Image (cartoon, rainbow, N blue to C red):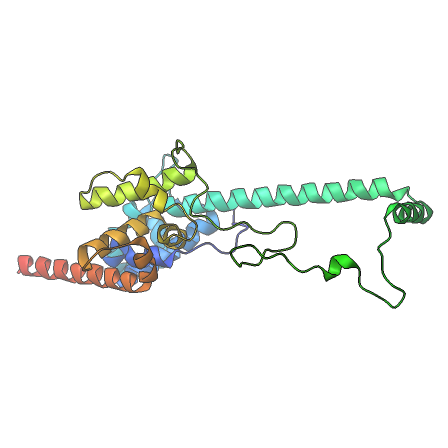
Length: 289
């Protein structure tokens, strides 16, 4: 059954930095993307490689270049169908969001109809009487006959002792903090766990000791380089970029610096991956000779 969603998210940075994609030829990459579109449209691919090739509309030479990646990119499931795991996860998340949005819209519409029924019996006279009663209960504001302005509108905003102007209305935003978690409190929040997991992965790659509480706390703020990088490229790619920077940059490496140089880093990592693939192919040719 064709999908109701006419598009899907394509994480281009993950694609460019993927070791599997880097080792593919251009023809193999074209087949890969074509089959991803088929899976999104119909939910899965057939288990038979011949049927998959027919869906890919690939020439025999092009198909041979992709065939060795078929099981990695589209593993065979228990039901005999092939699916790309990540695209399958994205499909489930998208379907859940659409379902939740439809449910919320239906609830809003039902509430609107209920309110309309309840208000149907109220006449304009009743509404006018209520407005007049409310007006009588309000204290009159003092102003002169010459059109003077009430005192409340002449008041100036208070200025704090530090010289900063206070915002004179209700609901003013509080000062932004790096973290809303109090020092010394046991930290078991999802945010803490996510940041700790990323830092631990970096430490494991570089052979460092496990991150301390202070290391995690420094990266909890919404404007920290770690969180902004993860929001843009994902967990795994963030770890890979930080590790690459530590191994290739001179001096100390910070998450803010990695985020600010993310585009340059992506280009470097893509170049290194491409050069490594060429070196491997040359080594294979020399070995065959």
